[in-house]
Length: 96
Image (tube, rainbow, N blue to C red):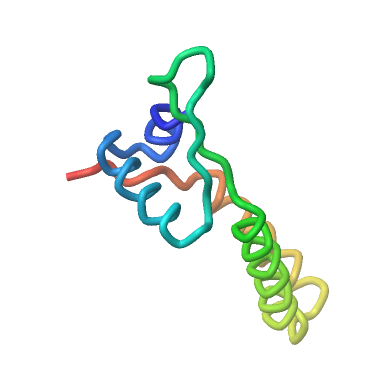
């Protein structure tokens, strides 16, 4: 739902709505109203959005491999441990 999306992104509902409007216009997401409660708007990724997501994921994997390939196995292990720690400790930046 739109309110859940805004909450998970830690942005105001108006920002989430504006962003979804732009994504709908680009064909990346679909907006659906609940048949039970027309006030409820659900957002889901379109087939085109899923295709782009998959392409992006594949490119990201290739990029990661290119970074790790020149490293020794020990260096890779250290790099992955550090990235894991950074990811675990990362916190959203509060909105100003």
